[in-house]
Amino acid sequence: MRHSIVAGNWKMHKTYAETHTLLDELIEKLPSGKEVEVIVAPAFTNLASAAHHLEGTNIQVAAQNMHQAEGGAFTGEISAQMLTSIAVKTVILGHSERRLYFHETNAVLANKVDTALRHNMRVIFCIGEELKDRENKQYLNIIFNQLTDSLFHLKKEDWKNIVIAYEPVWAIGTGLTASPEQVQEMHAFIRNEIDRKYDKSVAENTSILYGGSVKPSNAQEIFSKPDVDGGLIGGAALVANEFVAIVEAI
Image (tube, rainbow, N blue to C red; front, side):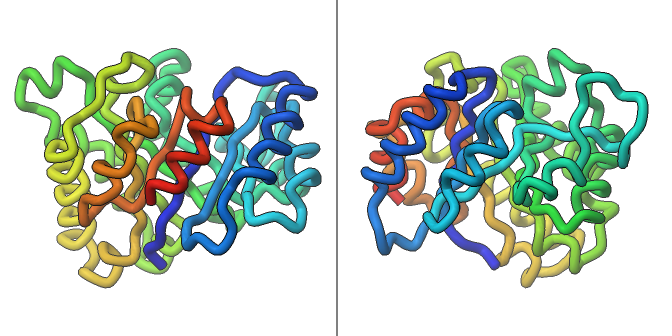
């Protein structure tokens, strides 16, 4: 079901002690009774302790990545079963940093999505164009291809476990932010393509998040757009007061 989500991608930040300090701040400061799902994605080393620490709270835990294989000789990798065994049932896949630095292709990501769904995990799937794609007016084609190659093989019923995160690569960690109008244009395009491939019920029940230099000063305007259902937050998720202010902006 489509609902509001604010997820914090902590990337390669926060030690064990720092993770628990931030979690305690969030537990204390996050508003109660607000109809928004809050998710944090710490480093792999802190996932199990974070999940345990957040038991009984309204904060969910997600992994930042996982391998497509069920197991085997993949040194340094983490499987879906390993995540679910520590009560982590959501995973971020397709982040632009994974695509860029670790050469994850649309085909590889399709396999990762399939594996996650076999384990009844929810997927926050990241898509987004680079600056050159926007300047060359190819950004809609890039987004269409990412959807088609990685997600549009799924069955209609699989989409209950899919969340889309639109993150223009040129706005991640750069301080640049897509205008609210650009954000709405892209979210409406994504929702329309899901409608065209499946039907309106799937499109209208899929949460689509925006990521890319979201901060307290621009969150409310971005979140006010009709096809924006929340955010996947990077840098601001590492500071409790900023992340809480973004959650309150929903």
